[in-house]
Image (tube, rainbow, N blue to C red; front, side, top):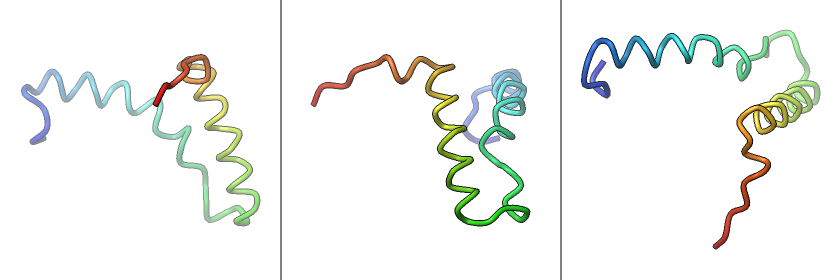
Amino acid sequence: MKGFRSVGGAQRFLSAFSGISPHFRPRRDQMTAHDYRAEMTVRFAIWEQITGAADQHTTA
């Protein structure tokens, strides 16, 4: 993979990403557009709680 300096770095990223990725890829073919948007809103709110992104304040 071009973006990684070593095979080990790529493996560490991919092992972490494999657990996170399904959280942001619901079975879209089995949902209506409204249900998909609602589900993604919930999933991003959960992600913000887990990562602490909701607690960080940005200043412009």
